[in-house]
Image 1 (tube, one colour):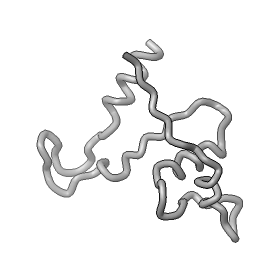
Image 2 (image 1 turned 45 degrees about the horizontal axis):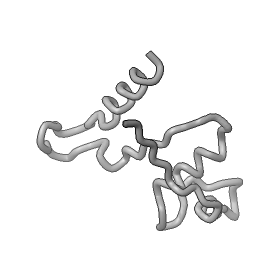
Image 3 (image 1 turned 180 degrees about the horizontal axis):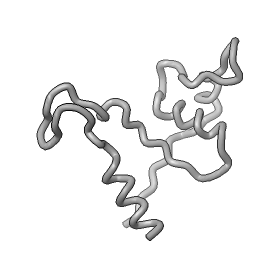
Image 4 (image 1 turned 135 degrees about the vertical axis):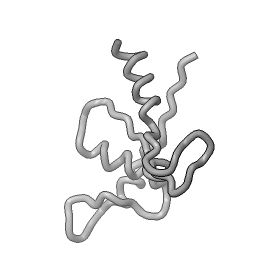
Length: 88
């Protein structure tokens, strides 16, 4: 079973990136951080794209379960499996 998840890419989320000093700021307001990050990327391409928000789990200050301290490599297996299933 294939599933696709898509955030609501409403215009209002893009409005949060308006700037008085730049064409576009790369940080929205306090609401919908992942969605405004996607809206930022949407501004630069007409091609299908994927936004993977890995900033939080990308680095650990202490070991956790099977992950060691430092860079976690979060998302690497996800991207590998995606590419393997869709392009190989």
